[in-house]
Image 1 (cartoon, rainbow over the protein chains, first blue to last red):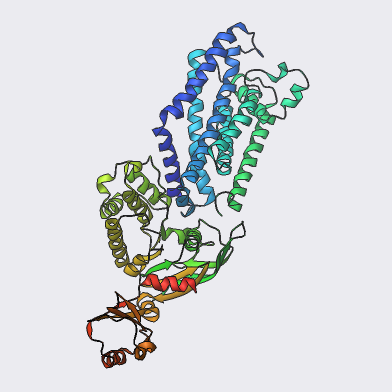
Image 2 (image 1 turned 45 degrees about the vertical axis):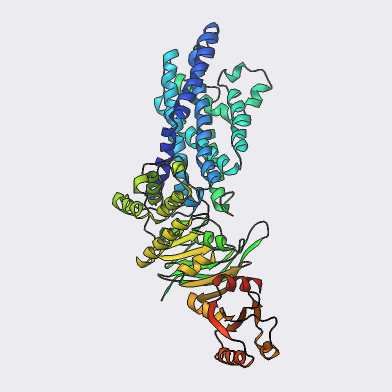
Length: 253
Length: 306
């Protein structure tokens, strides 16, 4: 195991976010704060409780998930896309590091960053709304698993993308709609049929539902199902990444 | 001298169907400077990229310093440093950060004293805290070399090291390459500047259309394939070659004041003595004589065109 190699990639990636502190931390915090101001405080104050939780508090897990997903994907995809774009990837490919070590470095750094942003978002939320965390352990489990899974997903997008437009298209056209329709702002029981059933095909529902359960012990789907689905996504992303390195897809000719 | 790199039946066909390498067999000796010459698209970069792990071979084997580049890639790659053709650097990083990153990536523990030594050798020490985007092209090239040397490799690949580099830096780089060789580093450089190979290499390989068409000691190659030209300056100009001299296939130049005689250095009898005697007999007075050797460039062009 080349730990020095893993460490080099990890610190390199962390240093990159440190340099771009404003983009890395300030902008997600600002955008989440806007959601709290608009949906939590302004509109939320006129809405009734959902499952016994005030609307302002109800949307917190969804909003944290929203920033976790988008940050994991954008950090990890950019982290591997940029060396490909600039050509510096040659060094990583010619180094004595295994695919697993490369992934550990890049995805580990991206997941760390999104977890930090997730926690900062939670702390920011506290400024606007009062909330509780009933199951802190499970909250952390969901936070960590989601960050790793979607950082892996972002890593695959970064390898697949061969221009900046492609880098943006999946987060914009697929992930954002899925998150908004995944119950971040409402309980799926509020939807009429057939939307309620259709929503169950949206993977983000399980992440938000499980995460919300860890806060308020209320969920749209059972916690066991949420956890199983989260693991399923993780395994799918691991399999995808394994395939990329096995075939050298868009990395080696 | 034992081989430090052994390439056997190495071939590469890209997914587009383009055959970049056709069954390459090549041995690079430990401690030598080997220049791989070839026109653009000949397969030089593909060959280097395969050895370094950037391109997957279609078949064949490469052993680098005793380790197979596929089955024992960790050991093999840790012994190889690569300076690629393109100036690909992390523009926003500092020189120090990027060189220490390379050392770590190649599995070496931090060693600030060693990094300082190579930065000083490459005249980069003053720039250690400068961002790479602030550096000139020549300085960036040095940074690429520092990165390649950061993990103390025993084999260094220089892919077109002086492309787009000014004369002064080119000389500096040649000196540095020689110093590295003295420290025991084996160097394989690709170039299409013949001057570079002629100046530095111990042995020369010529690659064209994915095939190694020749591997030879530089001196042997020059003498084996080199033609010499004897330039005879005359006291008085001549309008045409006298019939007695036709057998020498002389060429007339400098408005009839010069005769050029080409001869093969390999031939035991080069005919010069007889030519001079025949010149005298047709009453052509010789003012001066000098000879010139064909450059590696001419040898190369004639090989590639064959």
